[in-house]
Image (tube, rainbow, N blue to C red):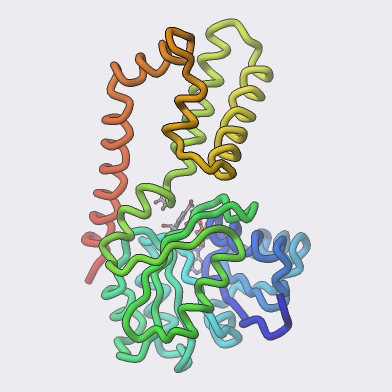
Length: 277
Ligand SMILES: NC(=O)C1=CN([C@@H]2O[C@H](COP(=O)(O)OP(=O)(O)OC[C@H]3O[C@@H](n4cnc5c(N)ncnc54)[C@H](OP(=O)(O)O)[C@@H]3O)[C@@H](O)[C@H]2O)C=CC1
Ligand SMILES: O=C(O)[C@@H]1CCC=N1
């Protein structure tokens, strides 16, 4: 990446922001064009030392230096943060919110209600830290093509990017990819526990479960056939996998997954409603 990179301020430097700016720096983004703002000076000092990014405890200072501001605080504090920043927002600044739930309409109001406000909602995920993220983005009408490109190139530096045309779809993106890493971590945890229950020691079970998840994902990403065919290739007729898959299906695995993802999207909608003005 070149020195013409925009300066990006992250308001909130927690798990998700850290995954994005950590991934950006690892991918060669100029660390001096990244500013992280957070209330915890100790955490900021560690970030400065490990990544050489700029840091501050003053959100307004971060905003003042930014071409792009990424709002990365918890949904519950987003209103207070936005209302504080609103009078200091420069015309032309691109605002990207990664908060679950919070609607563009609420953000727009809290950020001062300017019709020209360029606002993108983004639902990223934590594998961004290792440039294996998956993000869904939604642009409000006042976002220019150039700004869309800027938002896309930030997130594309840390993973894949999908645009959605309907803001409502961000709830589904949250259910698939935003929260999705946790589902796979739970699966690895459950497979490890089951391996231990069958007599393996914990380290062996954990290693096998983790490497199997990694191998399966890598194979699927690099394959020219879909996951249904890849599963078929593991499943010998009357063999061992067939028994495992039949057990999953008989225990309504697909319904369990669908219900979990529905609960996720419902919570996203609930956050939007509860925290709206
Ligand atoms: N974690 C994830 O996988 C994903 C998270 N998101 C979204 O990202 C956002 C952040 O989530 P996550 O990173 O998990 O949460 P974290 O709590 O890890 O990060 C939020 C950070 O913001 C800081 N903070 C609190 N108040 C302020 C303030 N007034 N100004 C600046 N910083 C402040 C917090 O400090 P302190 O701890 O001291 O309060 C914390 O360091 C949420 O809106 C979430 O919905 C989206 C996709 C995935
Ligand atoms: O759990 C959450 O609310 C956040 C949003 C998506 C992933 N983590």
